[in-house]
Length: 513
Image (cartoon, rainbow, N blue to C red; front, side, top):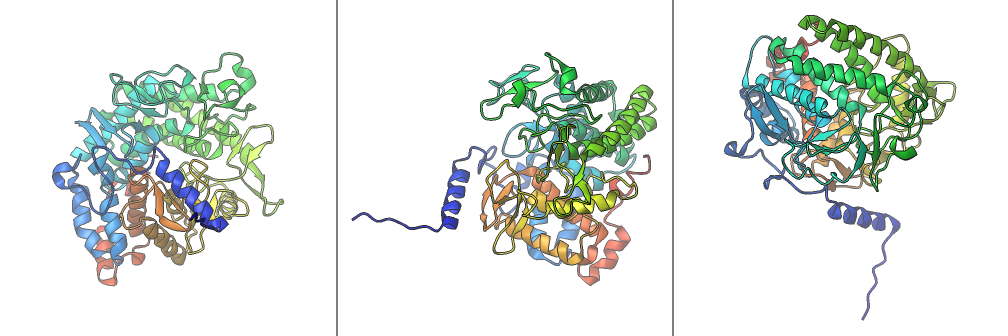
């Protein structure tokens, strides 16, 4: 007897999503047998140990009010150290893999270590952790010098190179590159880690001649990418072709008119840009260029580069006027577009991956001029609405957040939920609701994932995604510093206030700006 099973449209979509995730090559696989599930690896299996991080966890995890939140925090804060510091050679070289892919994305590695740079480094005090982060700064600098238009790198050029060696691009692929997508945020991420590290440590010795050459290469690339498509002519600096992810217009992407912003071929999600000016990346760029000027001034080196950084920051800020567009909620009000082309076309949306519109407060990239905060809040209202952002999703049980076209429709990314909670306008109730979504998204693993299905968080992609783990952990430390009453019972509030959670880099990083 033949039986048929009748499924509702919703159930059919659920089945399709599960089938897609289980068949995806980027889902549920790990390195050397590691799975982010429940607890930290045994001490003998951890890649790198930080006395500062371990002591912080020992003291404060038992004191958190919410035991489920505490369990997730205990795993996620150390996850990058435990599992992704693949190679550490003193302060000369640190290779940080992204998690379940044994390659280093400059952007991901920056965000993976950002909590340590912000909260666990000390001024004029070398530690194994500070040495390792110096090694990452130097590794990123060498990677930029290898190829300013690549996003992900192999440990060296001796192996097969990975699955993307067949990509056609200008400049050509090499075995040093795991992937060769030009993403403006890759270069900004290098600037960000450099600025963060120096701001926390004032470690002048870390910034060698190789680093200065990489800074020069970044600034030159920004200048090249400020050109219009027409100005590039028949020999553009960057082109990319791949069967499922070509850049249009003969590998250069859709045309862009000169705005003084810098173009980007791909988004932080590694997906192609629809229009060449990725607005969040440019907002972050102008902020990091100004900070770079301060870093170079305090280093007493690169005066010409420092002056160029300020000049470019001013130009990019002027170009960002093209990002101001009418709101779909009220045409008389302006918001920030996600991408523009300088001709009047724009994309109104947001993607969970930083830099995003939602992450601008986290990146301290909301300008301070009169009216800018109001523009951002109006933008955020558009981003957090399923009527105006096609990648904002809400489930029937209260799960909600921004996703990404990088994975299936209806998949919420923890990164999007996390970056929302850094907003200074968030109420205590809003933060607690967001933390509840994040706890549920862990689905009993005590880890953040790339994305989860809006109706069932046990359906998720990438069990081991170190960037999201670090972002969650950084959020908890941030809330401990800004709203400790949400996380700590009353008896421990005084103890936290006295220690201020430690006097790490975040408390001092702006003193040299």
